[in-house]
Image 1: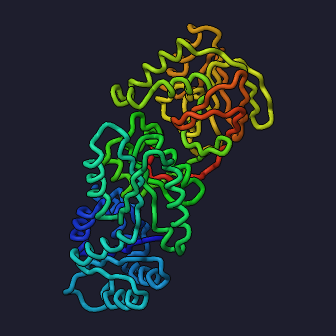
Image 2: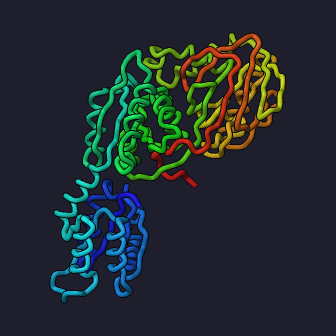
Image 3: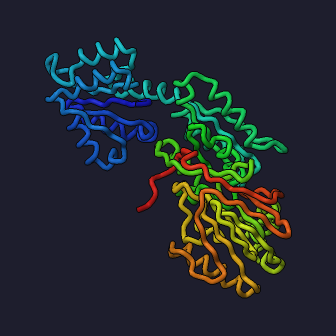
Length: 434
């Protein structure tokens, strides 16, 4: 159990412990907590502490403090916080002598009041490292102010190292160098590290592609135009709330994918989507924000030509005439062309494939409207010009060759093979809504 905290308190000191937990909520939120049965019940019933991840042990009268001491000696606890009543007779549980002896033998800090508990927690938190890959040109805000805000929230609990992305350098390449350094460390040091991507979807996808399959947890701080990855996983687009999501410590294991040899986190588009993204230049996004994609989409709809496509899905070959093919791994409802099933499931081990084959511009508008409706009601589209499939592997060959967009980046490749990588990413994210 990594970085577990043990909490104990005499009956007269429980309220003082809850007050301390309330003041340290951001720091404590990221840790699993062990405590006696009666204290666990008190924490669960108090709105200040009900969100904490608590594992109850036995009640004090039944040896709860002895269980804590045993876990300390088994190296399963990294800090013991025990608010004890000094006026109680020696040996009254929680037994101070027992805890002191166990912590001394195991070399585990023991904090007996709020001041020492805060210092010990700060030192323990700084044993966790966050490597922040920060894109200063993403978004429309003040990069220096945003970076200062991020550090002010994260650094009391994490040791933050900032890596600025460089013009002309793939953030994924920078991140792969970092991953190699982390993987070369001793296992206990590597396990305490996370990588945080701060920027638009291009930066987030590049970093996620480098982290996929490594087991290193990924934090996301969205500063882009669409912030599709964050939206799909319900990560707040507000920087303060996004930082608090990382500190809360909840993770979601999701799939990743590859297109030929290129990592893919979000989605890829052939035809319409590629043309739309190509038209939505950085200058246009700076001026219009998300409306840039609406304008670019309208322009592309007027000029998009149909093409022939041979689609090999898990060994079954289909020939179609299409205007757009979208292959999605993770996508929010706003990625309309990916909504053939009404919802893209990020952790099912499959890719969602939506093929639009309208013969006229009016049919294309009707197909888009059907996809939009599917996204709103979260149910599969029912339109004759839409073919919707799920697959773990798909190969697409087009005639004439079409441009390809992967996670917002334009590429040229034909044929293209998409492969799902189930459970390859561990992402800090809030619990999804019911």
